[in-house]
Length: 167
Image (cartoon, rainbow, N blue to C red):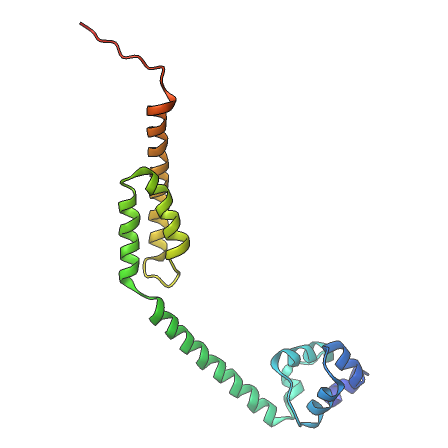
């Protein structure tokens, strides 16, 4: 890293100022007493116009630390994915939400409000019926809105209709 810095004709203070860190940190990195985190390593790579591999090729400890960190990140992501699946993949909940949306279509005003509640507050992307619930909810809402319009127009808006009795 020291050589790369010198090739760019930068002082430790210059680099420290650009990275918003102390000059002592730069000195520790160059002397092998500490190692930059991944974010700073990327910034150094851009600043020195060298690949990360070129910056760390002579430092076996740093390369090993990066490999260890990468492996740990992969393991942690795998564990997190498994935990998310275990926590949120409840098939019964998706089925119950689907039935709730379908039943709410029987009463027009409820069929407009209940699907919104299910979509925005109860349905999660880990649900087994996630997309189906959204699609069915939208269809139920459209049908319920049409039903509400028909009920309102028949009872309150259209009072001019006269029924004649034919003898």
